[in-house]
Length: 385
Image: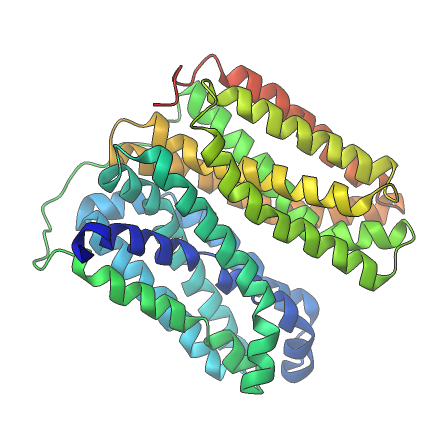
């Protein structure tokens, strides 16, 4: 009985640990600045570096899986993630902070890219049932990292220990993962499929994910400021941003479930991205009209797009390594662009003097996502089988 459900438990625990190392930083930034004397721009590298490395290292993850095996490669990534989080106990040193950020980025990149191959290999006949667990676990990890870090700070009394504490759930995931790792290392080289750079479908998926990623990181960075500009207090604006984040939990679970009833996936993509577009129009032009409802709908829709984007490579690929290769291409460009988008919004805001133009750009980006979703219908598999 245990062995039957072990891959599912491993999937849930590993997916959960792919985001807390990133989201747990936000509540501690001011303490880090005060205690270390670092400038905020330097502290920002703690989150920027992992996201960039998540994009860059996603290129090499399929090759690593082909060389060392899927389970062993994810195991190595988990070890790197655990150690990188644990050393933050000594995060007084800027060097430790940056080195740990690098290790976290590499670990998340490898594990995150190869989880699609893991799902394809272990749950090929149950994709519709299992994918919601994958996306919901990842979103729960992101939300818990944001919400539980301050209680951890109160409990442990030190921001270094609060950051390092997230190594414990990663350690639990590592223990559960061990029975899946082959007892003997198999170093027989397998040829990893190349990135599908000539595939129109792959490029459509990649651009969609890149736009979604850039939009998500831009909103998590600037949504509070946009509502403050519109007249909300800091407490009110922060509350709206929290609604946006937690509403995403619903989107992470609902979107993959809806795939079981929607015959053509691109129809669901069109509906989700149109909802994102209309929500952003409300944030841009009518920010004081039912903002709680708008932020909730926006969070559900945008996270639904992320869940669908992470699901599509699993459905469209024929083999686990092909799924990893397509996911690798999607994440490489998506995270690299996504890490730059918040800075671009800030630059445009400083140049224009308000958030009207940068948020107008987000509306244009979301409208582009609707068009690309429609175009994707000509290239995806007809049925969601």
